[in-house]
Amino acid sequence: MKPLLTLVLLLAASPAWGAVYKWVDESGKVHYSDQPPPQDARKADTIKAPKSAPAAPAAAPGPEGAKAVPKSAAEQEMEFRKRRLEAAEAEAKRQKEAQAGEEKKRNCAQARNRIAALEGGGRAAKYGPDGEVQYLSDDEIARELVDARKIADSWCK
Image (cartoon, rainbow, N blue to C red; front, side, top):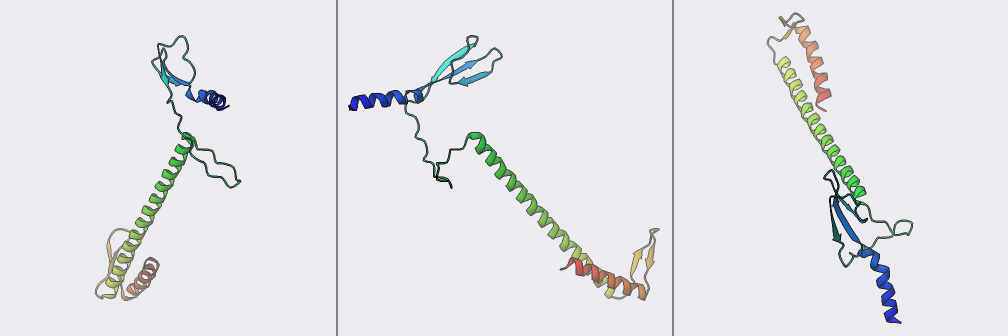
């Protein structure tokens, strides 16, 4: 009985020992297949599969209790590309936030410097619409100081 069982198991496993064929077509393109090459192939070789088939990885049961199917190479590639895209998007977002933080610090420093200049006394000036320097009166300095404090409050939160 044991020899018969062994023979049946060997015959059942024989399709796993199938051959792999390699051939070159007329245009010089190399093909690999489990089917024999066509008659018009330029060069044909038979590449044997390994004698012992690799053990299939044990699949963990899924949420429905069924065994999970191993992912194909295309699915693995898609998941890899998705993870890489998500990482690139996260890095771009982090850089954008860092750049916005630096810009906010610069604007805050400029607003505080403007307040210090206006409060420092002396002559204050600004450029007019025609590009000429216009010196500010005390009332204009007071209005500019109020505006500068509002700007500083918005940037220096």
